[in-house]
Image (tube, helix red, strand yellow):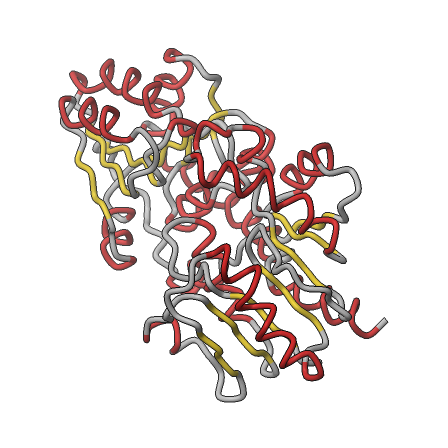
Length: 351
C-alpha cells in the first residue's frame, strides 16, 4: 500500500501539531508526505529512508486545497492507494481511493469563541464536505466522536488517542516528596481553559504558601489573563522546551487542568506520567482520559481550592495509590493510540 499524508500542520503549536508529528513518527515505510510549508530538520529526521516528501512552500491554504495539492495528486494518483489528511479539510479532488480525515475535536462547533473569524469560516465552509468524502474520520477521544456524530450524523467516526509513547519512554516519574505546595497549569492561554477560575482559586491559596507556574502558548484573549496571573505572582513559561518542561514537572506537587472543553487533554496524561497528582475539571472527556487516577472538581472556586489542597497534601500511601491507578489508565490509552489508525487504514484499503 502507498499512503499519501498531508503534514502541512506538523509545525503548529499545540495538540494538532503534536498529532501530525506522531503520524510521521509511526507511519509505515511506503508513505509520501505532502506539505504547503517547509519542514524543519528536526521533523525531517523523523522520516524513514523509504519515505518521500513533496513540498510547495509558502502556499496559502485555499490555494493549496483547491489547486496545488489536487495537481500533485493528479500526477501521483497511480501510486496512491490511500490519502490521509490529519487535519480538518481534504483537498478539493475526486479521489478514486479511500480517504481518511482527522477532526481532532468538536471545539469549533461547541466553543467557537476560541477561534478567530478565519478559522470559524473555514470550519463552517469546508469541514462538512470533507467529512462526507472520508471513509473514516478519526478523532482524539470517544467523547469527541460522540459530539461530532451529533453535528455530522453521516460521518463514520473512530477515536484513536494521541500517542504517549514518547512521554513513557522518558520515564521521569518521581518519588514521594514532602509537599511544597507548587501548582502547575499546562496548556494554551485561551477562554475555554477557564483560567480565570484557576486564578480566583489561587488568590485564596497564595497566602498559605502556594505558588503556581504556567507552561503554554498564547491563544485568543490571552493578554488580560496573563496580566492577572502576573499580578498574583504566577511564573509563565512560553515556548517551553521538552527538557525544561521535564524539569518543571519534576519540581511541582500538583498539575491543575480546569479546561471546559477538550478533544483529549494531553496535559492530564503528562501529569500522570510525571508521577504528580492531577486535578481536572469534571468533564466527560477528562474522566475518559484520567479515569480514577485524577481528582475531579466542579466549576466553582471552593471545589477547585479543595481539590488542589487534597492533591498537594497526600500521604505517601495515597501518593503511591494514585500512581498505581495512573499506570493502569496509561496502559488503556496506549492500547488504542494513533498506531491503531494505520491498522484501520490498511484494513480499509485491503478489504
